Amino acid sequence: MGFHLNCVLTLDARVLPMYELVIPGGSAYVPRTGEGPGLPVGWVLPAPWELEHTVEELVYERGGLTPHDVRAWRVAAGVPAGPDPLDAFDDEDLLLGSFLSLAAPVVVAGIGVHAYAAAFRSGRLVAAGGVDHDEGRAFRLADGGFRPTDPASADPVAECAGHLHADLRAADLLQGYLPRNANHEGRRHREVCSGPVPYGRSGRRSHFPVLSRARPPGAPAPGAMAPGTRVVVVRDADWDGPWQAVEFTGTVDAAIAPEPNAHPQALDGELVYMVAFDSPQYTSDGDGPFRKAQVWGRYLRGEPGPGPRKVPG
Image (cartoon, rainbow, N blue to C red; front, side, top):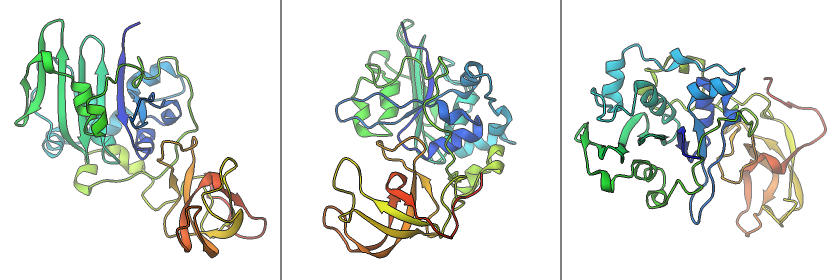
């Protein structure tokens, strides 16, 4: 079976709530990357226009990414005005990458008849390329345009992935790291991501109408424990950490709103909370004392008693 992959690769969970704006409910269908020696684990976001055909209840918000002024967006995003030599990209690919990268760096990638990729950071195109080995043609972003290049040395997906992590540049990403398709079977992988949407730079976010529906940074996630909620911080079931004490009490603090856990070992839908401790605490490594810290949701248990409990959905 060959590759039929149209996706967005990211190493940062903050991209997931942005994707959720484009195709509500779609973040539940985002698989993780495979694993490789020393390679970072990330997320493979299916092209939303393909995912909506796979999962009947999902609707891709097409107009949400369409700028009022496409030319102004191209200038702001550094996207060449003319088509690439292979006609690999269309505006929909590039708009999606530009939009999602307002949260964190991403790579838009396609592997099929030919391979192509485009890396975005903070809304701007920073690298792009494509290759068709059968026709012996390739291109690369250079000097503000898509320029022909030697197909023998072209590896656009790895070159662009190197902008996410240096180790990806030299890796063979088609040997188990990237799936052969992003989610053609429509399999659910996690709970819907409900984290806040990073807005990015105001001049670039203004191009995307979908951001008018965004929950701004600082707003708590639906279903999250609200500031003021009393909690018990507990020890991990499998090791003596992350704190020296077996358990201790504290209060969810308003200094930082609950946010998705971006660690590769995060549980599906796990949030990270800022917690003010009732007494100073030391980590299992002996660091401290700390009176306040961010704590993964798996280590928190609600303490019985009065006080705020959950943010309504």
